[in-house]
Length: 257
Image 1 (tube, rainbow, N blue to C red):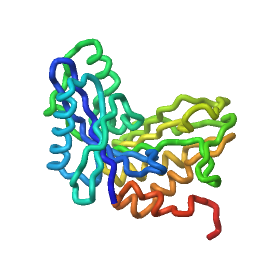
Image 2: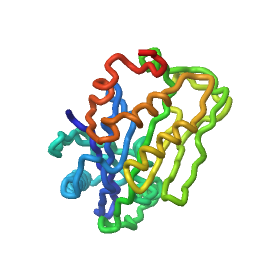
Image 3: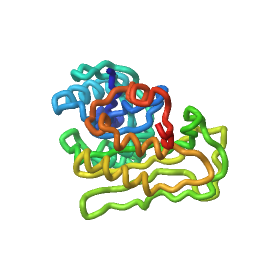
Image 4: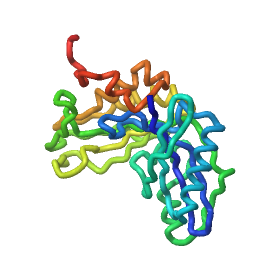
């Protein structure tokens, strides 16, 4: 029951490095991340600190300078093992931005310009919970094969921050009338929600997915919405085998059985 947990780093050229908490990326299909969240429901503060400090030590050992991510495999008892380091900004970076308030892209540019990091480890505070769903152009009825064609209607939910501390964020690069090509990755948007608690962030994600309207191609929004209501997901009892174990025969949202 392995889990995929990664630590976000920022390092400058002056020997400074900080970790900005972790992301849980265990909801995967064929080793491709589908849903990410921050922080992880598995970790306690002691394990987070140990993982973060080891990640920073690794980056400093190779004089790393920029934003980066150190990925780990963890077991259900919080033992963790180094997997790889991604020396770039990752798709799931918005959930870290939402819980820390740190603009990772801005910090990358400042570091690249030779500036010292403006934040120390003591400045990094985790606030609330964030969830990201990857909106893919894929056919749920054909083993999640990519779906190509014209987006005849594309209306993501409104980006907003409400009086209850809930945020909706949409990162996308397509628009109404755009063409989904066979030559690129089938991800067309990242839908993120943030709220004071994990339960609220999940419920808010469910509402945001319901408000996402796409026509012209097949997409995975019904699958993502089903996961948001899945008892195992809600309980936080995750592993990289979640989708294969819970949907062994694929996903058929309108199957009468």
